[in-house]
Length: 213
Image 1: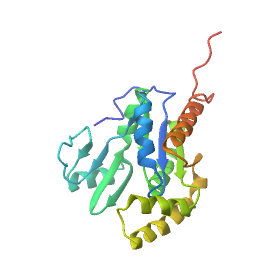
Image 2 (image 1 turned 135 degrees about the horizontal axis):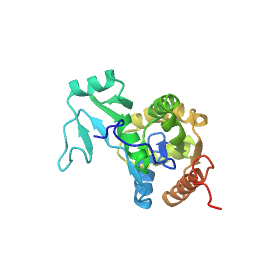
Image 3 (image 1 turned 135 degrees about the vertical axis):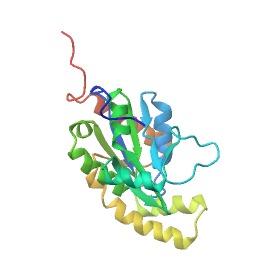
């Protein structure tokens, strides 16, 4: 794991890109596409208390921790954000993110709306994170379109879909808290817009290298 104190400062131009979306909004697909398209971008490796699945490697897919070790890191304030899902804890170490940013790598976080809010709060307390942070909310143009996508997957009952839509309505209401809003159209168009956001953020005067003259 990275140690945020041992890495020299650098990576002024590096971005911490946070993408959120309601369930079925397409953020996981967009994240995979973005990572494949940009060799200068990497994902932050998440810590988890669940057992490794077949072929998963510690330090590559996840950092696998026991519950006690995870709790100690929570109490020490080591996590940029963390949550418990279906009885297992997941968290992203602040040192993991800062270590990669200081090496000049853009870091991508795929988190829910609550996780994004936590990251924003932590970034306000840290100048490096605040300078790097770019938040994007991805959503279909309407709940009707989102419902069609969820039904098309064919993996959930009508009752589960309605429950997801209820949660999605609350999540979508938070879109104004993000720097950018992408109304999802297609995989290719979502990626094009996301790429445009990254490139624009790279050219901000606060991040762009000064011209030589």
